[in-house]
Image (cartoon, rainbow, N blue to C red):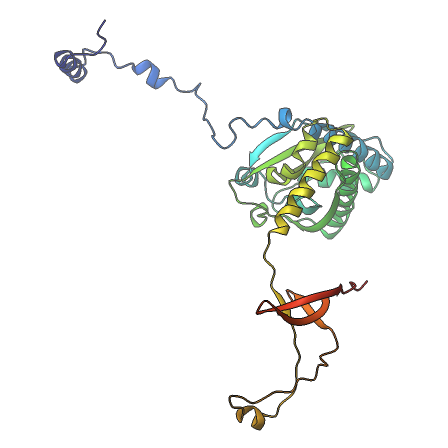
Length: 328
């Protein structure tokens, strides 16, 4: 069956479109509310499936932070972690109000910087709770910066959180967190390009009633070196040792083929400028080195061998007598 339209059929369709005799499907064109945008940057990116141990780490972090806050405030605090979320850094910046208590920290040995965001209403609730209140009072958030007392209290909470984060990672991959600085305007914090992805988790803080959230954000690229650990894949010690030995042998073989410049200092002396300018062909320069003493062979400027210079089959050679012991 021939499914191609003839020229007459094509002309009839075009004529029908012009005159309105052919329905162009306006109902479909008008009902586009159920369509969703497709983001190629995040397509196929399933963080919860690819790195399930991140949720385990977040659960441990919430438990340790709950214990630390409850002990400090002398009141029972409940913390609930939300599911992992992947978001572009530019969208994350625009989602935060001003002022926002943002705290930047390092995650060694991982690359990049992380951000801990303490929601404004949580700041005021924690300050009230630290001074014996219930933490449920209402405070106007917009229109003013945080006071010195509020910043001091929240710095204490952030340092506590960074310590708890190290403890939560300890069994998976030991890290060391280091506080860098605090900011209240999200637009001045640019830890990665706006199109780069972050993995963020919200932690809901409750004390009699919800107080606010703490958000921990880390660039997706920072997790790449430890992605195999976060995936929960099993590797026994023998397999890891075999992999390390294979890597060592490959590196060793590559280094053996690297060219190295070797120089032998035959001797040296000092001449005055007058004597140097008066040198002519056939003049003999007397070196200070004794020909009976061994010479030093340097590889890339590093003294490695002692030996003697000579000739072998009309070629200049250096005979190695012994290696030079490395300085401890």
